[in-house]
Each structure stands twice: as structure tokens, then as C-alpha cells.
Image 1 (cartoon, one colour):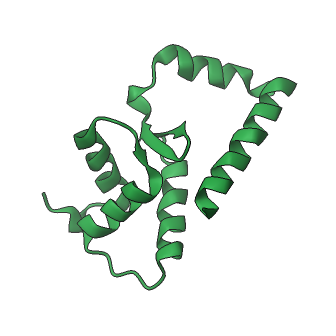
Image 2 (cartoon, rainbow, N blue to C red):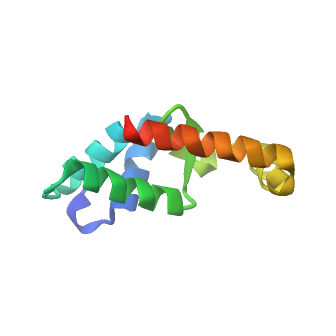
Length: 108
């Protein structure tokens, strides 16, 4: 497949589709960089850029513990329940905890 003419997110989507299971974000991002033959001046900047794009792309779902999968793999009831609880104080604590865990995993 010609990955060089695809966006980074399309390549990541293809990789996850082929693997059929969540993947550690660094492994996924390095696979994207390798597949696109993308020249990288700063690996940490490239990882940060692609990680940010994954966060913004609704096709991707953070599974926890540094692993990313596809949103289509998440059962509908999980999607609904997480979107309903956004306004509660409990979810605010949970979201803050999740945010901290994501930041820690990026920095490690």
C-alpha cells in the first residue's frame, strides 16, 4: 500500500485495522513514521504531533495504559455512558485523573 501519499491518521487507522487490537501509542506512532518514510528531525516533536492528531481524530479511542484502538471497537453503551456523565462532579475527577495518566504516559 502507498502510505507516503496518505495522511498520518489514515496510516495509523490502517495499521490498527490490520492489527485488530489496541497498540501502545509509541509503537503505533513509530510504525506510522516508518510507513510514511517521514524524515524526522526531532522524534519527540513527531510523536507529540501525531499523538495530538490522534486525540483530535474521532476514529481513535484511548483504551488506557498508553494504548490506542479504534472507536468502532468500543461497544455503543460505553460510548453513550461516557458522553452522558460529562457534567457530573464524579466524572470531572475521573476525567482529570485520566488526563493526568495520559500526560504521564506521554512524558515517559
